[in-house]
Length: 339
Image (cartoon, rainbow, N blue to C red; front, side):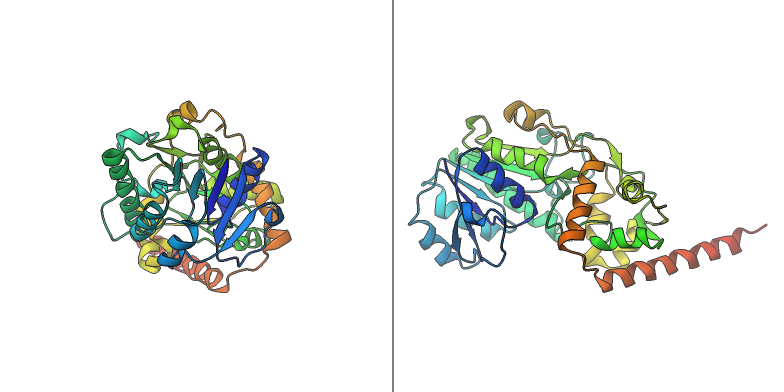
């Protein structure tokens, strides 16, 4: 099939495109053309900025595709643009959403798609905007029967990752463990979570292409290995052969310290990240998550060390400051409750 990927250079897209090519699909990417990727010679590239709505529409309506996969649909104007451009011209539109779109607290754990409602509060803007996109898509499915498929990833890691770690420190996590520096853990670290790696997640997107069972449906897709947040760091310690020194602060404190950086911790990551994959496995049998936390982290560390060793000095300094807050708090507690 002729598949257009809007985006194509992000973390998830980097895994989707090779799997599409392995299935003999003819792949075209639409993006700003600012990144060089290993599969570039095997795909067609259309350079453009989706935020330029008129150019996006006029240039792509000259093309012919069977399926469109929109990986960069973050706001309502994005989804309006996609449907206006393609809704009567393609067999299927697949949109990448997020589990952040679900309203919390969840109604079910593990979470089931059809038992949940969508986020409503603009205070967490990422979730609010993703939920608005989902509402619009579901209305178009309900009112017009459009062949739309919605896939909601959970926290997903892979080459190109820019959101790894509690403070999204990326390689800084590995460096701090290597150097014996303390690492922040949100809460007590025992919140259950399924950490997903891109090669597994990509199976859901590729398996949905041209799959009529997925038309008009919405799914989440995540790892099925049950771990806790602290395991993310403890497993790196095992891989490196280093002891991991964790310190703990409540998500409320972290949100107060840096609302932009830590909103996802306060509004999303404090709830169990466990998801029931029954629906996606029923309709997309290809989706069989097999990558363990250990395997995925080994691959990610290799990518960090080969491609992206940079450490964000601001986040590293923030982590040090938060450790001082923690140490001061513990001293105060010791003083108050000393016998």
